[in-house]
Length: 312
Image (cartoon, rainbow, N blue to C red):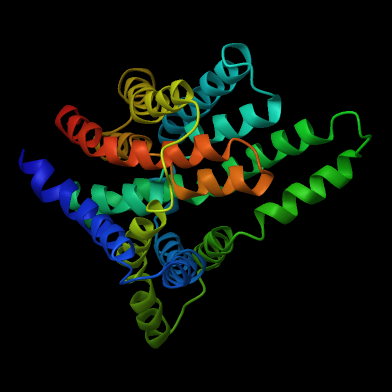
């Protein structure tokens, strides 16, 4: 109960404040969009830049960490993708967007603040290691599969498809922030103290503004669509992905305790808004994606509490 009150509820209360403000029209849709643009295009990339630039890459980038998290993530994707085709008879494009919802956990906006509140700031190294390849890997995979599904039979060349994928990935501000962080880290380029102070000021606004804005965004999502698929996606996101991450990390790859906490807590998060953005980008399975983001975010209050009791 202490974990629920001290760790989880403060995060969701900020989301709730944003939801309530938008519902009461104290914070209109234009303001919500502007806040989310700031959070996602400026503050969050700055946070990732600062965090990755300061990471001890040799110590943090553990093969066991990545194998545990990403093996489970792609397993979750393929369960949802296969079920969408074989059980729910959806076309491959729909199935790709549905699988992407099960793949893309809200690693930054929920995973970071909850892990920090549960285990402290020093526990975030594993989170940021996962996040450093999270968007590039998942967007690259999702876009490649979706573009292949959409262009089957059109004779699109491999080089054209590759250009589309690369352009889509490297137009993401989060990816640019990650790349800049790696450039500073690997080059050893010293930044003046005044620059770091400015970076830290902006980075410090990323999580609270994004959580508040997320509440406003969730107001727009109305539960709708095939609730059997939504139930499957909630199961994949909140149970299958973290459970498989836990089993692989603890028993197959021997992941240390800090790494296990980061991997499982990141995996246990509900699908992020990016899951809906991906579906909306291609105009497929939008209702399912939007409803899953909303319902799974609400359900994750309980599931996160369970995982905090299970983790060492």
